[in-house]
Length: 178
Image (cartoon, rainbow, N blue to C red):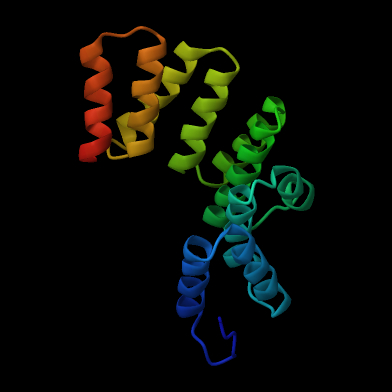
């Protein structure tokens, strides 16, 4: 049980909630995050976690309905929340809304790799595999250690019928983190 007493320090409470999101299941994490909001925890600290929990609980429509129009002032929190909203919108098949949410996420935090990877995935789903590959290559040029970017690059190369060596190299880069 998480105790939200005033003398707790913020880092400890966030660590407890993060552990709840991973170890206790998505639904419980969502309930605990909502309780944290009721107890006055700062939205920028809680909403991104709650959004990820709703995604994990397979509730994309609820996520979009409740947080699609929410704008947070803190750049990283805004990027995390808008990226989760974009993922939910893409799951629901609304690629245009997903693109708009990703644009908001990247305006808030231009280097936020999860949003950049998701933007490339949305581009690929829309049928522009070469454009998606260009977006991933741009990401990896600036953030060569991004494993998700390398995995997506391998997936795109495989779909674009790149050489087996190129595909293996991308996946190997994902494993080594360089």
